[in-house]
Image (tube, rainbow, N blue to C red; front, side):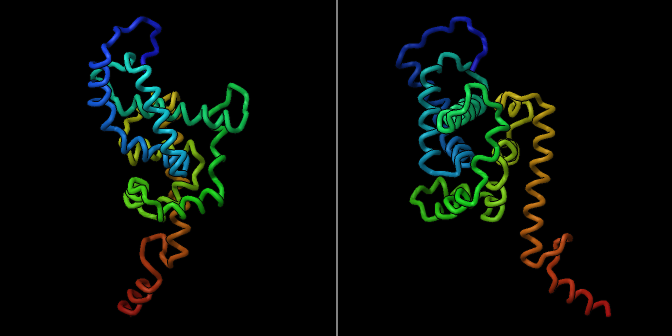
Amino acid sequence: MSDSPERVPKLSKEEKDRRFQAELMPVLDPLYNFAFRLTLDEDDANDLVQETYLKAYRFFEYFEPGTNAKAWLFRILKNSFINDFRKKSKQPAKVDYSEIEGYYNSEEVEADSDAGTTSSDMRQQAVRDLIGDEVARALNSLPVDFRTVIILCDLEGFTYEEMAKVLDIPIGTVRSRLHRARNFLKEKLDKYARSMGYGTNGATADDEEDEQETTD
């Protein structure tokens, strides 16, 4: 969305509907995936996507043709997510994004996420299939701001510059937050790997024994 308060040309309803359908609706599936990864709840994700499209339609004249529609929608959704959290938690008007990082990081949310595997919504299952159950659990357990940068960069393929615009933070903050998020995710997956009998070098205990017998 443009930050300029200047007037924008008024589109006819037909032209607005045509462009909206052609430029923004193809982003529906990745937008839903982003919403679900933020909320960890199917109904909340659907509500968030609906709210995002309603806002996008209302302010569509501010969308610049030829720019990144996906990044524009993701930014609207991210802001809607923060504002919705403020309303539910009755926080003051000014709340830093990092203050909400632990809200969804709970055992109850993980249980709800696991129960969602029986949902009839195939898009939710597609997100899980995309990155695997254990990676999904590890990702979901991250604080929301770290989870977000992993989603934007490693799942959605945004550049650092695009991520900075979506999140309204400097590129340097994007880089440092992504570095920390990846380290947190690696630690969680390392713990899971060890619990399954894998060493840090990627070999199982049985494989190591077999290798030792071969060298003896």
